[in-house]
Amino acid sequence: MAEIILKNITKEYENGFQAVKNVNLEIGDNEFVILVGPSGCGKSTTLRMIAGLEDISDGDLLIDGERMNDVAPQNRNIAMVFQNYALYPHMSVYQNIAYSLKIQKVPKAEIDKRVHEVAKSLGLEELLDRRPGQLSGGQKQRVAMGRAIIRHPKVFLMDEPLSNLDAKLRGQMRVEIADLYQRLNTTFIYVTHDQTEAMTLGTRIVVMRDGEIQQIDSPANLFNFPCNKFVAGFIGTPAMNFFDVTCEEENGEVILRTNGGKIRMNAEKTQKLKAGGWIGKKLLAGIRPEHVVVADSPEKTVFSGKVSVYELLGSNAIVYSDTDAGRIIMNTSQLEEHTHDSDIRLGVMEERIHIFDPETERTVTN
Ligand code: ATP
Image (cartoon, rainbow, N blue to C red; front, side):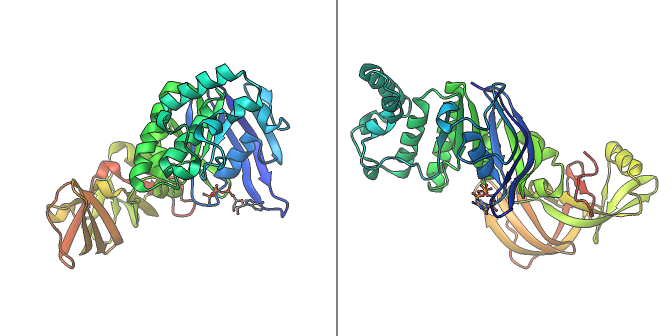
């Protein structure tokens, strides 16, 4: 259990490149915090600075109130699990899990007890005599976690721990990690570029881009109230649809006009758009595919076009249409088939519209 504070943390590599820029983050005891973002955004560098594997160029790292910048990795009471497992190939599963305790000269009987406890909790009891080369990817990952758990660390750091696994195993291991978190009562910091992992595992998610934090929020808030276009487009699959609109006042109502229709604003958005001086101006609008619907009347039509691709996924279908507002994706549970090149008229759930300043790309109605 630990509280971790990053104060104005910056990482500048020797070539002058700033991989992490002035990051501020407070992670409470027993939180499961996810660092997520596209490749190269600085999430691994941030994690490695917390672990002590990378020097901090500027700022302070505090663990339980103690400044850790210059403390050696092994003295930070942190355990890290990597994408490539980093197991010792010549050692058995037992020896791999026991290794850190052996180094600490923990008595043999105590080591044996703890290895068996950990192996039991991870379903590894039958595999203790095997070498890593005789294990599947998921089993290796479990051994890597066992090796981390046995030390009873204050903080668990995980860097893309599931990215070498196939889709099905990833799903299974995701649930196992969630389960582990519930049992261990420890602070977790987890790096991934997979937003499904981020949304399902995290109690809080930190979205990064180009070394900077974009938004720190709960999964639900990130989904419903993204602070800018980048976060809106990054969280959610398929990604949010974006399209140009003009904000107008029509018969006392505030609307967003698209090429093919209009979207009525509720009282709250009306007030915010008026207060922001947006009437008569161009804006960028966004709607998630699950909030696009087939329009059942001309008045409700926002986009008109033709179906390009229809993907039936079982309980839902994804329909890609080329419309007067560009490509619009709908994720629907109405399973009527839309054939290629058929005409389609789409509407939106008006309450679920997101609106961005086209210059700054910041949300204007949160
Ligand atoms: P990925 O998902 O691809 O692992 P990431 O978000 O974890 O990406 P980092 O590994 O933190 O990204 O790297 C952040 C940036 O720092 C990248 O642009 C990377 O090229 C750069 N970088 C990493 N190591 C060095 C180094 N030793 N010298 C200079 N630049 C580096």
